[in-house]
Amino acid sequence: MFSASGCTYLAVNTHTIATVTRGDELPVGYASATLGAVHGLVGDELRLTPVLNINRVKGSPWS
Image (cartoon, rainbow, N blue to C red; front, side, top):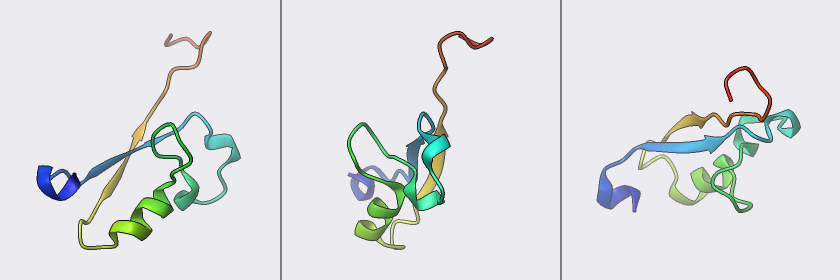
């Protein structure tokens, strides 16, 4: 999908960032995929750039 679209950005979620100790543990999507696992599958050839998908927290000043 990334190759076909030419997209080099991969959104990583921040809703569990408090439990992440390394960047490659950042979750991707809603399942158990991580930034490190996706990078391990596609390697450096696609030159994916992680971007943060910042989720609003209920009750925050921005919600």
